[in-house]
Image (cartoon, rainbow, N blue to C red):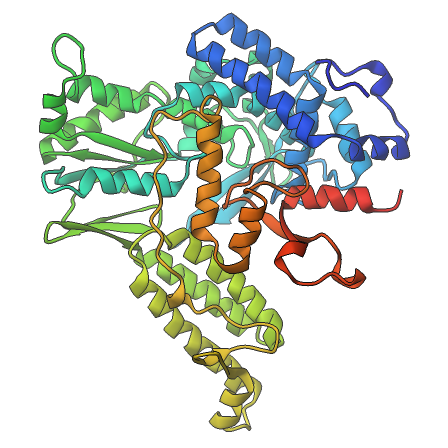
Amino acid sequence: MNGNYSMTAKAERLSDSKTLEFQWKSIDWKEAETYVNRLQVRIAKATQEKKWNTVKRLQYLLTHSYYAKAMAVRKVTTNKGENTSGVDKELWSTPASKMRGVLTLTDKNYKAKPLRRVFIEKKGKKAKRPLGIPCMYDRAMQALYALALDPVAETTADTKSFGFRKGRSCHDACEYIFTALSRKNCAEWVLEGDIKGCFDHISHEWLIDNIPMDKSVLKQFLKAGFIFENELFPTNDGTPQGGVISPILANMALDGIQKILSDRFHTNRLGKVDNRFQITNKVYLVRYADDFIVTAATKEIAEEAKELIRKFLKTRGLELSEEKTTITHVGDGFDMLGWTFRKFKGKLIVKPSKKSIKSFVASLSETILKRGKAWKQEPLIEKLNEQIRGWTNYHQSVCASEAFAHIDYVLFELLWRWAKRRHPHKNRWWVSTNYWHKKGNRSWVFSTENKELLRVDHIPIVRHTKVRMDANPYFDTQYFLDRKFQQGMKRLSGRFKLIWKNQNGCCYHCGMPMEISDEREIFFKVLKSAGGKDEVMNMAYVHKSCQQTYLECCSKE
């Protein structure tokens, strides 16, 4: 099979399952990523130079390449939705079916199937969020065209946009909010913005006219419709939540808010940015997907910024939510991305929000008292440690010491109820000595011989280093490589930090750089069943998707 050509050869369109399985297992993923990334860099450069005809040609080359199709299929078959089917009830769970998907992906006579409509609960609300689930083929097509569209989106994006972007995260948004509000002479007012049904109401006409990609394919993505309770409904506006390409389309629709604010509050009559206006008005935007804040020196300036944004959104078929869009003084505080930002005596403090703490306590309670009420101690510890690591990793960069101590107290109370319920006829001394033990200098450690529960308040607070505003992942590759490695060195500790350092932050299987937020697994170079030891030199970090591919390749033909 020759992956150097952009078009899939007819000879490669095979039907034999064993041959397809062999083809899938023989794909060189490192070469595939290198090939796709090279084309993406060229697209980004052409976008920067505004050579739109070149962009169009390169996008065509990418979307018709064998390696890009393979990567698109791997993405949709290794993410969290891999076991969720669309209206056709079809899943690509075998190597042969995945390879068949690669060889059949084409834009010729492409017609998207309707989405399967499901509803998920919103946190703290009775109303449910609608999700549209495409079938596997349509998901792969969206992932394929997302590969070609993302370099354009990254190059033209607002510098203070952080949601659903390469190399950026909500922690970067948090740091930029802190930078904008922490100084003595900073803005005193904040416009908390929320767009009403952003994904569901974006104008199709605006997307078709302004998104630089194949219009016929884009129309299929947008006009597919959805099926709910065996009834077909058309889609006249919006991009479905649950689609692979939807976040990129939504980001591109909202890019430009930063410019209209800058043109109004940062520029002089000659149209040039003037620092005097910046210092006086103190208007700065920080956006994460459809949630954003705008700082302002006065309440009147915040109101004016609100009207400018309202007019901007109207052209895209969107509007601000009157309930959630408010103007707040920094002394009263506001919530965003699970954190509370508030000034106390001139000092800005960022803490985990009460909603975030409450929801985490509820999930711990469900795990211990409902799902795990009949579990043995060791699997319960494993599950709780997983939840603790996830929540603390998110809040580790803010003032979370008090919250961590509170979680420790709640955990003890819940676990004591769990243990007492299991042994209603045993006294307190027996329960405590059976489940809580002394480990080193620590007493009352919920543990077994092999596992022990993490102590939440012992997790250190590590400040996050914010990303450079003008950094582009397709141009500043070395900057992002170093950044990924350093983030891992900061967040990990003990032997896990040594494993990360020994690998230089790269996956053991594919050799590509890993992000600390990536789904990853520990790989034993020599299996424990074959005499391998639980030591640093025998352990390696791997991508979850790479491990899945590795297991497929190791399976019997």
